[in-house]
Amino acid sequence: MSTPSAGEFNAGPLSERDLENLRLAIAITRTSIQSGEGPFGAVMADPDGAVVMTQENTALAMRDHTKHAESLLASRFCHEYYDDPRFRAASTLYSSMEPCAMCMFTMFKAGIGRVVYGLSADRLYAVASRYGTWPRTLISSHECARLMSTPMTVQGPHLEDEAGAVLQEMQTMIKARLAQQAPGTKECERLRKEAADLDKESLS
Ligand SMILES: [Zn+2]
Image 1 (cartoon, rainbow, N blue to C red):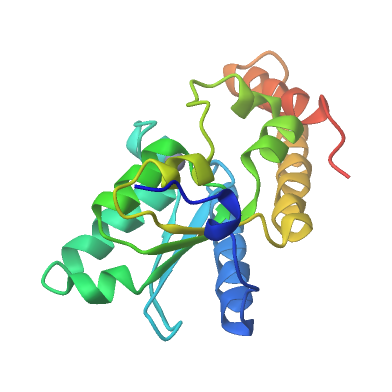
Image 2 (image 1 turned 180 degrees about the horizontal axis):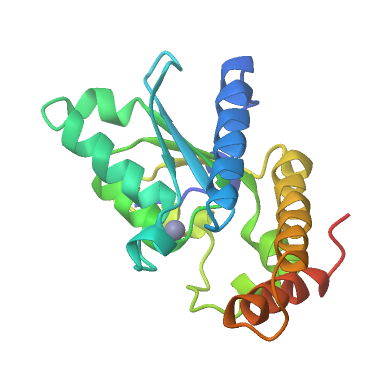
């Protein structure tokens, strides 16, 4: 079996519909950060590009670091369209950030044929050092696709500046919350650490 090159996975420009759906995933990220979650959001679109499902991050709410927006959405989508594998294979998941390996392989097992993402994982980790210190698999979404018996189409990064702007908004929001906290409390320390993590690198 020949190994496809990275270019094959990233081939082709995005359509207007793709850009709309990716922007929706980025907008959902804003809802995630408002509730204190990480800056992640995902959208599932059918073969015509119509949105069928959306998902915020819920790791904090569910006290479970495996509850990433992309894998949760892939599982929901597979359950809903279990009897229609061709529909699933022709559908696309849009993610505000580059999906991790766990999410990539969940999408693969869910039979989703294509993923489009915004900010690259490298840029996310460079901007928000907090995420770089979390346990992470050192394999990119494109590399994951190459390890699949039926490789998914992976397109990204796209709209990186728009996806990255959410991190700046997150920093502003954390600082505003910090200003309202009484000094010395546990919450104050947590927010101070979060703000410092985002300050370590330029957000511009
Ligand atoms: Zn993930």
